[in-house]
Each structure stands twice: as C-alpha cells, then as structure tokens.
Image (tube, rainbow, N blue to C red):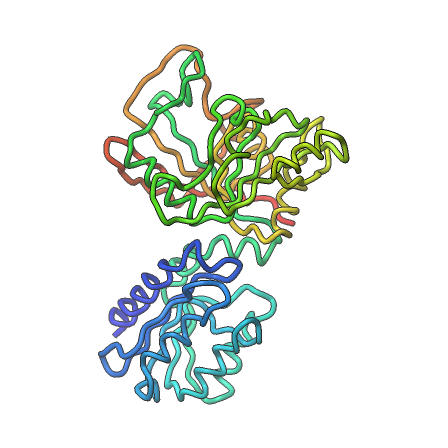
Length: 369
C-alpha cells in the first residue's frame, strides 16, 4: 500500500513541477485525487492569482471527490488571498483522507490547513515524500522563512576549472545542450545576477532567447560605482523583464542617466567599498525575488561564497583543457586549510551532450535574515 501511495504522490510532484517558474510568489503545488486505485482528478497551480492545485483537481473529480483520497505536495492553504482557502474546499467536497507532502512554512498557513481538515473529521497524513516536496519549493521555503532569495550559483568551466582563456575568451565553453538547459533554468527563476565586470567583458543579454516562449527573469547588475556602459545590450532589449542596477552610489547625474535608459536603481549599503551583498539580498527579497541565478563574474561569485550566500551550486564541466594562469570560478582570498573548505552535499551528476553538470548544496548553512 505504501508503494501505491508513494506512486500517487510522485505523480502529484510531477504535476507540481509544471508550475515551477510560473507561480511565484506562490509555491508550486500538485494534487491528485484517488478513489480506490483509480485517479479521478488531477491539478497543479499553474500561475499566481489563478486557482490552486487542489481546486483544479476537485473540479476535474467533481462528485467523485466525495470520500476520496487526496494527495497534495504542500499543506492546503487556510487563508483568503487572491483565491479562497483550499482546506475549506476539501472539507466542502467531502474528502475522505488527505496525504500532505509537507507543512507549509508560511506563517499565514503553517499547520492551520491541517487543523481545518482534522477539525472536520478528515484523516490527515503528513510527510509522504517530504524531501522531494521540499526540493521543488526550496526557493519558496528560503524566501518565506528568511526574507532572502534562494541563490543558485551557475558556472561553466573546463576540466581544469578555467572559466576563460588567458585572453579572456569564454564563448563557448560548454555545448549547445548545456546552454539550452541554462536558458530553461533562467525561465524558472525570478532574477539573474551578474557583476558589472561581466557586462563590460561579455555584453550579455541575460534573456531566454535560445528557446522561444519562455519568460525572461529580472536582470540584476551589481555595479558599485556605476561603470556600466550606456551601449550595453541589456538597455536595448525587447523584454518585459526589468533591468536593476545595484550600487552604492546615491542620487547623482549618472543615476538619472541610467534611469532614463530604462534601468531601475537599487541603492545598497557599502561594505569595503562595494555593494553589501547581504543588504542587496534582503532588498531583492523584499521586492519579491524568491529565486536568483548568479551567473558571474569571479569577484561576485567569490564574495558570495565567502559570505555564505549560495544555496545551491550548478557547475558545468566541458571536456576541455585551457591550462596556464587563465581565470577560474572564484576571485579573492580562499581558505588556508583543506579542513576549512566548502563541502557539497546531496550531490547529483547529469550529462548534457559531452558536458557534465554537478549539482550540490553547501554543507555549511547559508546566512539567515
């Protein structure tokens, strides 16, 4: 029986994944309704402001939801937002049992949805495939509990850890399949961040242009002294997403010029002459940025790692060698002893053509708000 229950929750997870990148600031949720051994209703949260997963599944199930088993990846909501509470809807439909993947960490919900169900006499089981349920909403969990975005560091390297040649050439290290995956990844996050050095050197667009129909993330450029060129392509894009410049410079003629170019300005505290990254993360979180893809450059990546701001690493390795003194992933001072190195856990390896991607989470916990 437990294998059947896991199979159904796995189906709910597969449905939830369809909403990743489309539901922010809400979590991605999937729901499956079962009578006996037959699925009678399925649904997922498709877009923020639209019906939640449970409502979509109940609509499909109709009268068959009465006394049925409901599998939902996240605790049903208990409060009125843009939509009515899902816990109330399950009670009204006469659900028999509810299997909840994980409790909602949102203080507005946290346990209250389960209380509503149990008060109505519905049997509730919590924790089925919980690790998997937490993984698909890791950005939502980080943001709702700390106020900061979930930060993913992505980098493409050669086998000897080089991110460019001695001359600075970095196009292209990885192959087409890796690049396509990265553009899909961009569509699943709220923001993409690079340092101004990357803009000056590579003039990136920071869009999802490889694959049509995908939404662009917000673009955040860390530029402490406002060195970004007016000719940068990010100022001349056909994109609905905004471009934000994070700086320590307060009101000035240059700030006004950048605003006229279409950029938004985020003024941050200064730390050692640069943007205080912790302050920036708090400001981005307050703006509703739940997930952030950090793509470069070396100075920004090195400082983010030293401050413990990275929640997940996505490291792409191409079967190439550069050699010499070419640049690597991080700039700045590293640790002095192997005992102090940053270790990764929950490591997974995927292949994209000839490239390999290593995914891992830092063993040391990231900074909290």
